[in-house]
Length: 616
Image (cartoon, rainbow, N blue to C red; front, side, top):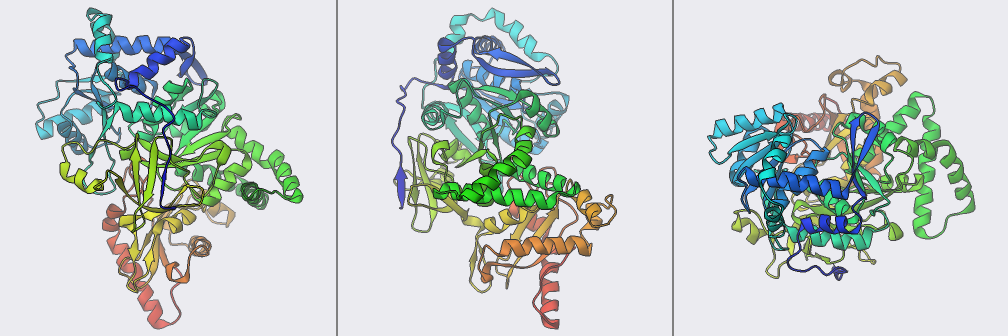
């Protein structure tokens, strides 16, 4: 199958915009809880659709009073919290355009976005973010920013007070001004390469896609369901789910502190989650590490394999009786404990941002959490495709959503079109010409194929395909996914472009490391930089590499590796805020490590057998 287009299921009038989704929700059930705020730890206060809408309108009036005009760009720089979405809707009610900025952005990055988007007003969380914006304005001598308002400094109260001079009719005129084709937001790609590009996303992209998604995901996201939002709201994935939740009537809570997530899940007790694959890797690896520390590692591994086997058999259409009995036993002994750690009510999760991995998908499905893996980019308003609960096809990212389509180009590149596809890059017609085919399909830059059911399978990133010196094309993603599934490994970068063989750079999971060291009779306080050179750690890494190699041909297998003493993180600049690897940055910063790896491997080859691993 080379193309799969799914017909639209939702007709949207041309004058519809995102704010109409909230107005419809208020008209349908004004008392329905759209949000829940944690004002004190462990206690959640529900916020009705009417209360949310009224506060949105009050803040919109304040923005209008402060001089925000229709079409103006207003930036938000904050961690994930209730006020983020509140202000997002207030900006739309004022007829303006929201420009999200990641809270981890540097002054130089802020300056570029503010200048490129012609931002006139910046809304920040607190003093730290305000300082970053002030430095950006000062360093680049930006004259367009009139004001910086802070949530924590009480400036929202000031906006509400200012808005009392603006009539409801003025707010309504502003709110209803935009239609499907009008710009709702400029989202700057976090960028694995080069300067961020501003993606122009319309009200139609969000509103129409939400209406279409409700036909596909209505059993998961509806007024009876709830979720805790913890991924950055500056990311298109979280942003789309926020709009979809408002459209569907689901309840959303927020937490900015990932270390508090388990406790918040326990008190909020959501029914579905949305996360990037790294979270599910951490949940699995954390459970495995805990079991190993308690001397129950073998039991957990058997339970995990049973979950995978059960899920695969279920997907194939027949579960043997013996496997059913084992699965029920482990459900009581192991799986139920994992479900309780996620609040006890979670049945589904939406995963996106990067590949989840087939084994991990089967594991979670086997313990009672169906992960609906999807695929999309900022340019496709997040989901272009997504799996659905009643037809979960693990190992794929599902079929296109209604109103969307996927085509596979002759070179294997995935092309997309439909209500989700953006309107182009802000001020960059040159990039638009490169991004779209002559007949209007968007070039995603990813490689994949469609299976016999019309579900998309992603096989790699077009620009990240490695070509070894022997001419073998290697996709790093499957090997890296397999390596990260090991509890001791945090990040993996497969290298080998124009090299004689494939190799890898590995980093250690600093949360799992102490337990690993203690189980092997070593001092658990040994720092990662020192542990990277230990024979025990190197052997464990070699075992992980051997397991990863089982899934590829000999020519694609990892022949050598190095264990690095420092992890790749957002703070070091090696990961994007959505946890994607910035491969060019890693390759530049680790150039000496890569050269040393291949030099050492050559010495070993000249001296005797082929290389099997190294550390540094």
